[in-house]
Each structure stands twice: as structure tokens, then as C-alpha cells.
Length: 218
Image (cartoon, rainbow, N blue to C red; front, top):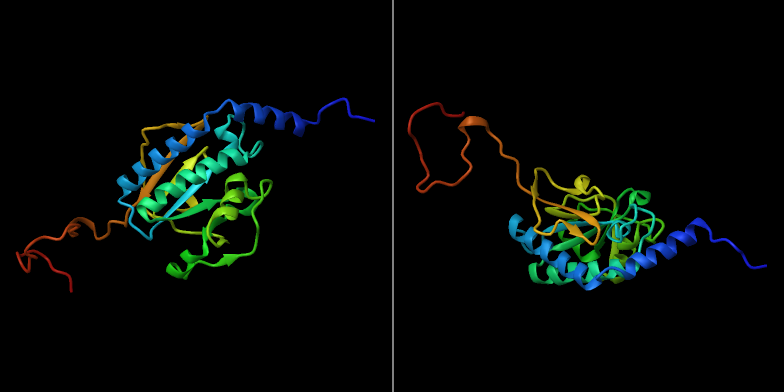
């Protein structure tokens, strides 16, 4: 006997599909490229550095985070990230959802540059990892998952909370595009800590001062 009523999951799926169809997916890709280039420029991101990408595709289509993931949105965001990473040379790290403790999908090649990173065994899927991480795992070159990372910068689409994977000290950067689809955008780069107190010097002087009075260490 055919079911007469849709389940809650089916209703969400239909609603999500309608919202997805109402979005300009090409525009989403262009916006991601733009804000990521701005982040690279603001943070002076160099080849071989790490940029963590946190994305809620549910939030992008206007649904609550973790409820309505979509592979179509993930595909366009992935392509945009891949375009900019090829220009700038950074390593992308795609954050999984809470179910996988916000582990990260990366290319195994990166582990050779960062041998302190430890691979863990899991395959991200939409219901445990999230649509973005699941798509990245299947389309990065020789993908693997690491449990934690210390990234040089990060892009957060949909308030996924990427701060746990940023190096100290995080410096917020304001993107010119404030939303990707319906999702709020945050981003930050990082800088080394300033240490030493009031006598410390933070820029190399030419010529280096060898004396000049005052109190010396040692």
C-alpha cells in the first residue's frame, strides 16, 4: 500500500531541492573565489601553507546547519576553492561536521610537508562528515583525513566554527561578500605571536643597533 504522507525527511529533501534550484550556483562559485582571493591577499598566504575551509551547504541554501546538505552546492564551492588554490599554491583542508569531531579532509601529499599530522581512518559521508567534506574526500587527489590541524588561514561559510583549527594568533578579515547564498561568511588569517614586552623590536633595523645604552639582557 502506497504511503499517503511524506516523512519529515522527505519534506526536508523536497524543500531543500526547491531552495537549491532557486540559487545561482555559478554565482556561489564566483563569490567563493572572490573571498578566498581576498583572504590570500590579506593574509599573505604563501605556497605550501594551509587554509581550512568550513562549509555548511545547508546554510548556503537557507536551511539550518546539519539538516539539508547538498552535493550540488558542495561541487561548486569545491571547484572555486580548487581554482584559487592552484593560483596561490596553498593546501586546502575541508572541515568535517561535528559527528567526526570536525576532522579535516586533506591531500596525502600535504602530510609529507607537515609530518606531525596524523592520519585517521574514516570516510566522510553526508550524514557523518557533511556534504562538503564528503565531496572533497572523493575529488581531492589521494585524499585522507586528519584529526586536527594548525592552519595559516581559514574561510567559514555558514558559521561552522573553524577556530579550533587555526594557528595563534587569528586576525579577522572582513570579506567584501558577506554571504554565500544564504550563508554568513567569516574568514581569518594568522600571525606569529608578538613576544618580549616593551623593549622588544619587531622589525629588522638597518644597520642593526649594537649599542645605544640602556639595559641589556644577559
